[in-house]
Image 1 (cartoon, helix red, strand yellow):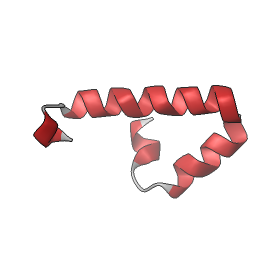
Image 2 (image 1 turned 90 degrees about the vertical axis):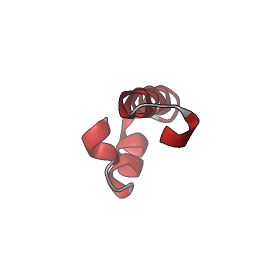
Image 3 (image 1 turned 60 degrees about the vertical axis):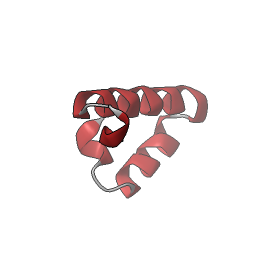
Image 4 (image 1 turned 120 degrees about the vertical axis):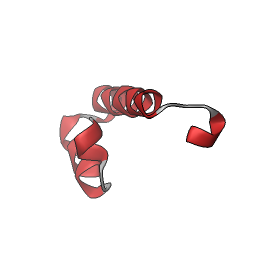
Length: 45
């Protein structure tokens, strides 16, 4: 994504917003399960 001109901060912001949206739509338990399974995602969100 950095080759598209996004900074690390931009990528983190998108990840956080996506996780927040997923929590609203799918629920916190389901979202936390997904976050736990994706390497590195828990550190970002």
